[in-house]
Image (cartoon, rainbow, N blue to C red; front, side, top):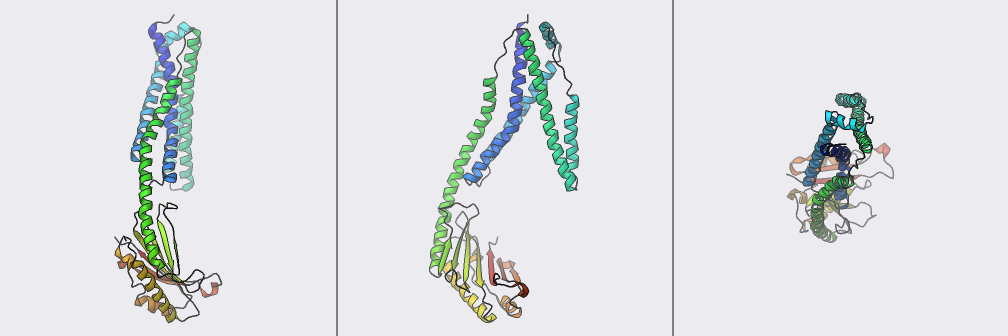
Length: 371
């Protein structure tokens, strides 16, 4: 017969042998649940801010669960090598397995260490093999741990059966071990989702007001206006309003493209003129200047905030560009940078020997936000 303390020890070791694997498994797989929650926030709810509270909770769960797992693993392994356990086994009069896992553990640690060394190599193949070795070492370590605890659990059950002692069910404990981190992560993520929904709705309204303002202003001077409606589809990178001087499909057309961010600010502008190679250089320059001036005047009437005033500047085709455009052939592209005003002006075309019905030539002006 076992003493009361020996029965308590038997049940304690069994409970730890079972729950330790749950702690270990949850510590490994809870990262997948955390990634799933983040993906829902990023993809479905367009979350723009990191969920730092959730990240800290996730890391805390992993650290606590791994600490509990290691404590239970060590206490069971060393406890079942002690005199008190040996006395219980002797009373049960059964043979228990005592497999030596030192070789497997050393191999797993060695493989992971080798992988870390190989990972520092400048050779891509060796570095890739090192990463694979680290993964293999981690898997081997996990298999070793599971083997140790399964063996311990089997030994305890064998002893308990021989002594006719009923072991406690660990189902509730396992459900608790699994449920607590899930509830914790869900609890800190839901408020993050609510903030993301609120941000998205505010961003839609801010962007929509500016998009409509710019679109209406350009409609007064353009033959065709295209815009992306934030109320129809949210875009985390912003929205485009494009105004064409003439109807779509007409040759020798020009347009302005206005980029608006989710705070409702104009953050980029660009102007494009489709050059007509049958016309003279001077005629193309005059037409481009006239079209750009018309588009710029329409844009300036929009009461939408801008990130920097240079985005609305009107002197787009400077004299040095005009001179270089007239000097070069229609099939020679070039670009001029005006960093002091945040502007690039280029003539984009194809070489004469490659020019065909799919080719085009255009004057392109790009204005970016200045700090």
